[in-house]
Length: 293
Image 1: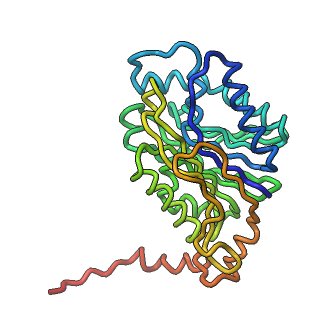
Image 2 (image 1 turned 135 degrees about the horizontal axis):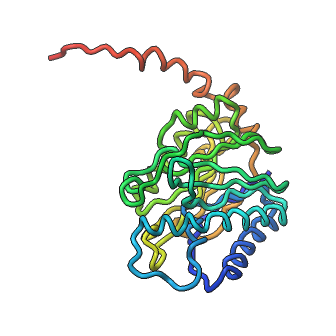
Protein backbone atom coordinates (compact mmCIF):
# COMPACT_ATOMS: atom_id res chain seq x y z
CA UNK A 1 0.00 0.00 0.00
CA UNK A 2 1.03 3.61 -0.49
CA UNK A 3 0.72 6.41 2.05
CA UNK A 4 0.99 10.12 1.19
CA UNK A 5 1.81 12.55 3.97
CA UNK A 6 1.98 16.29 3.47
CA UNK A 7 3.63 19.51 4.41
CA UNK A 8 0.72 21.86 3.73
CA UNK A 9 0.36 25.63 4.01
CA UNK A 10 -3.21 27.01 4.19
CA UNK A 11 -3.83 29.98 1.88
CA UNK A 12 -6.51 32.62 1.46
CA UNK A 13 -9.21 32.14 -1.19
CA UNK A 14 -11.50 34.54 -2.99
CA UNK A 15 -14.39 32.07 -2.77
CA UNK A 16 -15.38 28.51 -1.88
CA UNK A 17 -14.77 27.31 -5.43
CA UNK A 18 -11.11 28.32 -5.14
CA UNK A 19 -10.71 26.35 -1.93
CA UNK A 20 -12.35 23.28 -3.42
CA UNK A 21 -10.19 23.45 -6.55
CA UNK A 22 -7.01 23.62 -4.48
CA UNK A 23 -7.93 20.67 -2.25
CA UNK A 24 -9.02 18.60 -5.24
CA UNK A 25 -5.70 19.26 -6.99
CA UNK A 26 -3.81 18.07 -3.90
CA UNK A 27 -5.91 14.93 -3.54
CA UNK A 28 -5.69 14.18 -7.26
CA UNK A 29 -1.89 14.48 -7.22
CA UNK A 30 -1.55 11.93 -4.41
CA UNK A 31 -4.20 9.57 -5.78
CA UNK A 32 -2.67 9.65 -9.27
CA UNK A 33 0.66 8.67 -7.70
CA UNK A 34 -1.04 5.57 -6.27
CA UNK A 35 -1.52 6.73 -2.68
CA UNK A 36 -4.39 5.06 -0.81
CA UNK A 37 -4.17 6.95 2.49
CA UNK A 38 -3.63 10.74 2.46
CA UNK A 39 -2.61 12.66 5.58
CA UNK A 40 -3.00 16.42 6.02
CA UNK A 41 -1.63 18.33 9.04
CA UNK A 42 -3.00 19.80 12.23
CA UNK A 43 -4.64 23.22 11.67
CA UNK A 44 -4.69 22.56 7.94
CA UNK A 45 -8.45 22.93 8.28
CA UNK A 46 -8.12 26.57 9.35
CA UNK A 47 -8.16 27.16 5.58
CA UNK A 48 -11.91 26.44 5.67
CA UNK A 49 -12.36 29.89 7.26
CA UNK A 50 -9.90 31.69 4.98
CA UNK A 51 -12.40 32.69 2.29
CA UNK A 52 -13.35 36.18 1.17
CA UNK A 53 -12.44 39.41 2.90
CA UNK A 54 -9.75 39.07 5.54
CA UNK A 55 -10.83 40.08 9.03
CA UNK A 56 -8.44 42.52 10.69
CA UNK A 57 -7.55 42.45 14.37
CA UNK A 58 -9.53 39.29 15.10
CA UNK A 59 -8.16 37.57 18.20
CA UNK A 60 -7.29 33.88 18.25
CA UNK A 61 -10.33 32.93 20.34
CA UNK A 62 -12.65 34.62 17.82
CA UNK A 63 -10.81 32.82 15.01
CA UNK A 64 -11.54 29.51 16.74
CA UNK A 65 -15.27 30.30 16.57
CA UNK A 66 -14.90 31.37 12.93
CA UNK A 67 -13.21 28.10 12.04
CA UNK A 68 -15.76 26.01 13.96
CA UNK A 69 -18.51 27.67 11.90
CA UNK A 70 -16.81 26.33 8.75
CA UNK A 71 -16.22 22.77 10.01
CA UNK A 72 -19.26 21.15 8.39
CA UNK A 73 -18.40 22.41 4.92
CA UNK A 74 -14.81 21.24 5.41
CA UNK A 75 -15.75 17.68 6.26
CA UNK A 76 -18.27 17.42 3.43
CA UNK A 77 -15.68 18.64 0.92
CA UNK A 78 -13.23 15.94 2.00
CA UNK A 79 -15.95 13.30 2.05
CA UNK A 80 -16.69 14.04 -1.60
CA UNK A 81 -13.00 13.94 -2.52
CA UNK A 82 -12.43 10.64 -0.69
CA UNK A 83 -15.26 9.03 -2.66
CA UNK A 84 -14.36 10.66 -5.97
CA UNK A 85 -10.74 9.50 -5.86
CA UNK A 86 -11.21 6.24 -3.95
CA UNK A 87 -8.87 7.13 -1.07
CA UNK A 88 -8.84 7.49 2.70
CA UNK A 89 -8.21 11.07 3.80
CA UNK A 90 -7.20 12.43 7.17
CA UNK A 91 -8.33 16.03 6.65
CA UNK A 92 -6.37 18.92 8.09
CA UNK A 93 -7.55 19.43 11.66
CA UNK A 94 -9.66 22.40 12.66
CA UNK A 95 -11.78 23.68 15.51
CA UNK A 96 -15.15 21.96 15.82
CA UNK A 97 -17.97 22.07 18.37
CA UNK A 98 -18.45 19.15 20.74
CA UNK A 99 -20.51 18.66 23.89
CA UNK A 100 -17.60 19.76 26.09
CA UNK A 101 -16.78 22.87 24.01
CA UNK A 102 -14.64 23.68 20.98
CA UNK A 103 -12.12 20.92 20.22
CA UNK A 104 -9.24 20.40 17.80
CA UNK A 105 -10.65 17.77 15.42
CA UNK A 106 -9.22 15.71 12.55
CA UNK A 107 -11.91 14.20 10.35
CA UNK A 108 -11.21 10.79 8.79
CA UNK A 109 -12.98 10.01 5.52
CA UNK A 110 -13.28 6.72 3.62
CA UNK A 111 -13.87 6.05 -0.09
CA UNK A 112 -17.11 4.29 0.84
CA UNK A 113 -18.54 7.45 2.39
CA UNK A 114 -17.55 6.82 6.01
CA UNK A 115 -17.07 9.92 8.17
CA UNK A 116 -15.48 9.81 11.62
CA UNK A 117 -13.08 11.94 13.62
CA UNK A 118 -10.48 12.14 16.34
CA UNK A 119 -10.37 15.01 18.83
CA UNK A 120 -7.03 16.05 20.33
CA UNK A 121 -6.83 14.58 23.82
CA UNK A 122 -4.34 16.99 25.40
CA UNK A 123 -4.52 20.64 24.28
CA UNK A 124 -1.26 22.55 24.52
CA UNK A 125 -0.88 25.39 27.03
CA UNK A 126 -1.41 27.91 24.18
CA UNK A 127 -4.58 26.15 23.02
CA UNK A 128 -5.95 26.23 26.57
CA UNK A 129 -5.06 29.85 27.25
CA UNK A 130 -5.51 31.57 23.88
CA UNK A 131 -8.50 29.73 22.42
CA UNK A 132 -9.96 27.77 25.38
CA UNK A 133 -9.90 24.44 23.57
CA UNK A 134 -11.56 21.51 25.32
CA UNK A 135 -9.88 18.08 25.41
CA UNK A 136 -11.11 15.14 23.35
CA UNK A 137 -12.79 12.25 25.17
CA UNK A 138 -11.91 9.16 23.11
CA UNK A 139 -8.71 7.50 21.94
CA UNK A 140 -10.07 5.94 18.74
CA UNK A 141 -8.91 3.07 16.54
CA UNK A 142 -10.25 2.75 12.98
CA UNK A 143 -10.51 -0.63 11.25
CA UNK A 144 -9.72 -0.34 7.53
CA UNK A 145 -8.77 -2.75 4.72
CA UNK A 146 -5.16 -1.62 5.27
CA UNK A 147 -5.13 -2.45 8.96
CA UNK A 148 -6.13 -0.71 12.16
CA UNK A 149 -5.29 3.00 12.13
CA UNK A 150 -4.90 5.33 15.11
CA UNK A 151 -4.52 9.11 15.18
CA UNK A 152 -2.53 11.26 17.63
CA UNK A 153 -2.73 15.00 17.01
CA UNK A 154 0.61 16.71 17.63
CA UNK A 155 1.03 17.08 21.44
CA UNK A 156 -0.80 13.76 21.99
CA UNK A 157 2.16 11.97 20.40
CA UNK A 158 4.36 13.18 23.28
CA UNK A 159 2.41 11.00 25.75
CA UNK A 160 3.50 7.38 25.16
CA UNK A 161 0.58 5.62 26.83
CA UNK A 162 -1.94 6.90 24.26
CA UNK A 163 -0.06 5.21 21.43
CA UNK A 164 0.65 2.16 23.56
CA UNK A 165 -3.08 1.70 24.23
CA UNK A 166 -3.82 1.80 20.50
CA UNK A 167 -1.07 -0.64 19.58
CA UNK A 168 -2.09 -3.08 22.33
CA UNK A 169 -5.50 -3.15 20.64
CA UNK A 170 -3.99 -3.94 17.27
CA UNK A 171 -3.02 -0.61 15.69
CA UNK A 172 -0.75 -1.07 12.68
CA UNK A 173 -0.45 2.61 11.71
CA UNK A 174 -0.49 5.83 13.75
CA UNK A 175 -1.12 9.11 11.90
CA UNK A 176 0.35 12.24 13.55
CA UNK A 177 -0.77 15.59 12.09
CA UNK A 178 1.05 18.48 13.77
CA UNK A 179 1.32 22.27 13.99
CA UNK A 180 4.47 23.64 15.60
CA UNK A 181 5.63 27.23 15.40
CA UNK A 182 9.37 26.75 15.69
CA UNK A 183 12.10 24.13 15.40
CA UNK A 184 11.89 23.19 19.09
CA UNK A 185 8.24 22.17 18.82
CA UNK A 186 8.78 20.37 15.53
CA UNK A 187 11.71 18.48 17.07
CA UNK A 188 9.62 17.41 20.07
CA UNK A 189 6.91 15.96 17.86
CA UNK A 190 9.29 14.39 15.35
CA UNK A 191 11.38 12.75 18.08
CA UNK A 192 8.22 11.61 19.86
CA UNK A 193 7.04 9.99 16.62
CA UNK A 194 10.35 8.14 16.32
CA UNK A 195 10.22 7.05 19.95
CA UNK A 196 6.65 5.76 19.56
CA UNK A 197 7.74 3.76 16.48
CA UNK A 198 10.54 2.14 18.49
CA UNK A 199 8.51 1.47 21.63
CA UNK A 200 5.54 -0.06 19.84
CA UNK A 201 7.34 -1.35 16.73
CA UNK A 202 4.75 0.14 14.40
CA UNK A 203 4.38 2.59 11.51
CA UNK A 204 4.16 6.31 12.36
CA UNK A 205 3.17 8.91 9.75
CA UNK A 206 3.95 12.59 10.50
CA UNK A 207 2.40 15.57 8.67
CA UNK A 208 3.28 19.17 9.76
CA UNK A 209 1.55 22.41 8.81
CA UNK A 210 3.56 25.22 7.25
CA UNK A 211 3.36 28.92 8.10
CA UNK A 212 3.26 31.81 8.46
CA UNK A 213 -0.18 32.59 7.07
CA UNK A 214 -0.88 36.31 6.77
CA UNK A 215 -3.74 37.74 8.84
CA UNK A 216 -4.38 34.48 10.70
CA UNK A 217 -3.24 34.39 14.35
CA UNK A 218 -3.77 30.63 14.51
CA UNK A 219 -0.95 30.13 11.98
CA UNK A 220 1.60 32.84 12.71
CA UNK A 221 4.41 30.33 12.21
CA UNK A 222 4.81 26.70 11.14
CA UNK A 223 7.73 24.45 10.31
CA UNK A 224 8.64 20.82 9.71
CA UNK A 225 9.11 18.02 7.21
CA UNK A 226 6.73 15.18 6.41
CA UNK A 227 8.03 11.72 7.26
CA UNK A 228 7.15 8.06 7.72
CA UNK A 229 8.91 6.19 10.54
CA UNK A 230 9.33 2.61 11.72
CA UNK A 231 11.49 0.83 14.27
CA UNK A 232 15.04 0.28 12.94
CA UNK A 233 15.32 -3.48 12.76
CA UNK A 234 15.86 -6.52 10.53
CA UNK A 235 14.67 -5.87 6.97
CA UNK A 236 13.68 -2.29 7.77
CA UNK A 237 15.56 1.01 7.28
CA UNK A 238 18.43 1.01 9.74
CA UNK A 239 17.77 4.64 10.67
CA UNK A 240 14.04 4.02 11.14
CA UNK A 241 13.11 6.48 8.37
CA UNK A 242 11.07 5.00 5.52
CA UNK A 243 10.66 8.36 3.78
CA UNK A 244 11.01 12.05 4.57
CA UNK A 245 10.90 15.36 2.78
CA UNK A 246 12.94 18.52 3.14
CA UNK A 247 12.15 20.89 6.00
CA UNK A 248 9.53 23.49 5.02
CA UNK A 249 9.17 22.02 1.52
CA UNK A 250 5.45 22.10 0.75
CA UNK A 251 4.12 18.99 -0.97
CA UNK A 252 3.59 15.26 -0.62
CA UNK A 253 5.95 12.57 0.64
CA UNK A 254 4.72 9.25 -0.73
CA UNK A 255 6.03 5.80 0.14
CA UNK A 256 5.16 2.16 -0.33
CA UNK A 257 4.76 0.57 3.09
CA UNK A 258 3.95 -2.84 4.53
CA UNK A 259 2.55 -2.46 8.07
CA UNK A 260 2.54 -6.22 8.63
CA UNK A 261 6.25 -6.41 7.85
CA UNK A 262 6.92 -3.58 10.27
CA UNK A 263 4.87 -5.07 13.09
CA UNK A 264 6.56 -8.45 12.48
CA UNK A 265 9.57 -7.00 14.27
CA UNK A 266 7.57 -7.41 17.50
CA UNK A 267 8.21 -11.16 17.36
CA UNK A 268 11.29 -11.49 15.15
CA UNK A 269 13.27 -8.31 15.73
CA UNK A 270 16.64 -7.71 17.27
CA UNK A 271 14.79 -6.37 20.30
CA UNK A 272 11.22 -6.79 21.54
CA UNK A 273 10.21 -3.44 23.00
CA UNK A 274 6.53 -4.14 22.44
CA UNK A 275 6.57 -7.54 24.15
CA UNK A 276 8.84 -6.43 26.98
CA UNK A 277 6.83 -3.28 27.81
CA UNK A 278 5.05 -4.90 30.82
CA UNK A 279 8.41 -5.54 32.47
CA UNK A 280 8.39 -1.86 33.41
CA UNK A 281 5.26 -2.15 35.50
CA UNK A 282 6.53 -3.44 38.82
CA UNK A 283 9.50 -1.08 38.62
CA UNK A 284 7.62 2.12 37.82
CA UNK A 285 4.96 1.39 40.42
CA UNK A 286 7.51 0.87 43.15
CA UNK A 287 10.40 3.29 43.57
CA UNK A 288 12.95 2.79 46.33
CA UNK A 289 14.40 5.98 47.81
CA UNK A 290 17.72 5.65 49.66
CA UNK A 291 19.79 8.21 51.59
CA UNK A 292 23.15 8.49 49.90
CA UNK A 293 26.22 10.61 50.67
